[in-house]
Length: 441
Image (cartoon, rainbow, N blue to C red; front, top):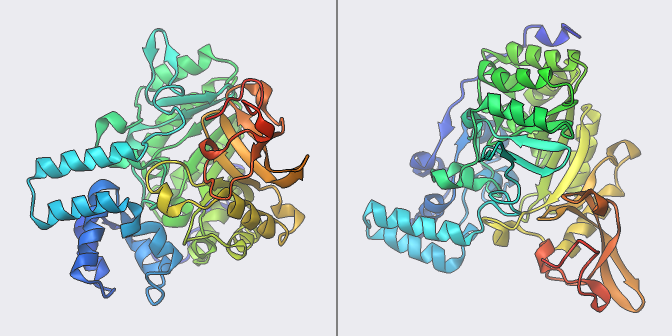
């Protein structure tokens, strides 16, 4: 191994994982003073959108004296505003009169379909075809990168209320992206040598045991054209014991070490939403152990209203992750799906928050890019607002794109104070499109 340091016994007791799901909500919310109407609204939300948290989040991350304003509470517990008011009333009425289960499920499905599940072409434009068959557990949006969704990893240690992958968790098979066909995945990657990077994602791949994760990772090491392996995970924030005292934590680190020893870049794409997630000592120990394998931790998360919509929060997050040896990577814009209407921040304000936070951190933390929209054409970065030829405009560029010719070419959108997503924007200067090949919407 590249280092034995991370296999030293971890100081401190092992912590038992316990998951809390909608059936446990009443007990959890007894810590708050909620009216019967408030409790009914919470039940209505969890009938449509997923809820799951765990002992670590509840006992170590949430400050219950600050609830309901505590950011981690808002990050993990349902709030009535997450559903449009008419849908919330409709679902609450069904629950109040104890409507038949089938009627409740049909109504929940109808509401979900109006919440734009799987935006940006995830179920059509991103699905690759191999030997005449659609590979519905893979996503191939950018030429050099393939996303892999392991079937056993399509859940999380806890669900974020803003999560754009919420359709994975609501129990509707038609909305789920997942595969366990490792042989076909390898065959597809061999047939596409332009793919140099893979991202194992979910859900959260680190809910899987190391033995199961290994089945997906090790075949990638046999494909010469795959030069980097990424693992997208919230485990450092929501269950850091995955890297310290879980029964196969050391096995996981040995797997990381094997990837690095193969000559490939291994990146743990860590989702941190608020600096509060970094404060428990176990998180720092978990990050130290991961870094000892030679893996790089890259930190990303969305800007979400009521949780981290301040420059102070982002500056602290970026500086702290940098101090801990991680790399600030992306600040995302809340995607146009699910509860975006509740958590979305206007692009104007989002850029102001990003710029103010960016100005407060050292050069080492300025690896971060944002605010970034993962839209249909690619990753659209809001560079700022400017006055050009007498018109106020957004200045934007594509960090990544379906069409590589569009990458890093500046373009302009008419200024719109209320815009929260790329499809809200219109080309500036009366143009019919943003760029040749980059159309409106």
